[in-house]
View 1 (cartoon, rainbow, N blue to C red):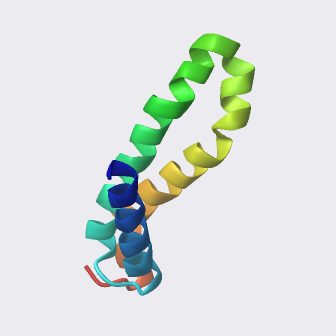
View 2: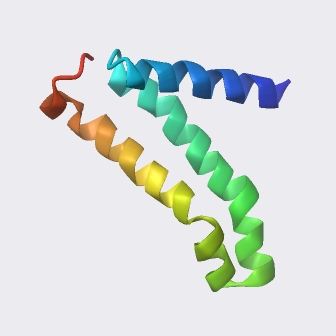
Length: 82
């Protein structure tokens, strides 16, 4: 049930970002999901296999998180609706 809820939130918020509607509000759940994915899935990898494996496996997650944070703070510069 939780996986279905997360998937639906990602689809809905992703569609809002693509449509340039309510970008600031749509990025908040996506940021929370990305932080949760890093903590739940990637952090045990850091503990078990070390820093190199952790960085290699989580590089896309960090890029997505940084871009979502950038969108959250700078959505006005791109004429995106609040």
